[in-house]
Image 1 (cartoon, rainbow, N blue to C red):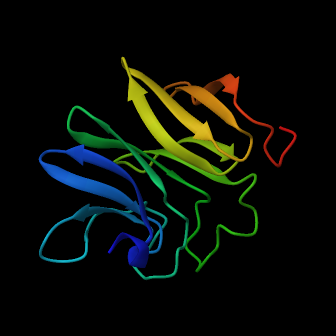
Image 2 (cartoon, rainbow, N blue to C red):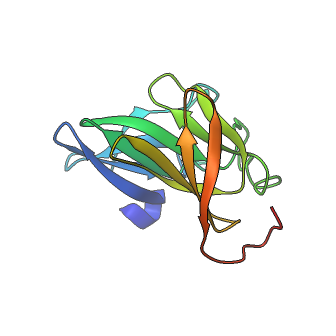
Length: 150
């Protein structure tokens, strides 16, 4: 089930298990009736199709609700994220879809700890602490030398 739909980054909220569904460009609820049920999609994605439009891959749950999601690009074209993935990544607020940070380098794994938002800028190897209201981020640690010099 997960491999077929390319689900990743699980989160639990309001009694449901959620995953980033890269193939269908959405956050999906995992249930026993269907392989997945769409729970949220970014506003720039016009329809749910199995063509990986933005490579939505991560989610963060706060107070039992999905609060943030990451994607490699704000794209509505099939595999539209793949050409500029090293400079086009976004961190979005859910459910509004407002972009909190852009210009990220293959972002993954947004998490909130003690009220503070963090995201992995994976191709740079950096962990960022994010201030959503200011739309800024501070690099906390670089845990490996990624494929970019940023």
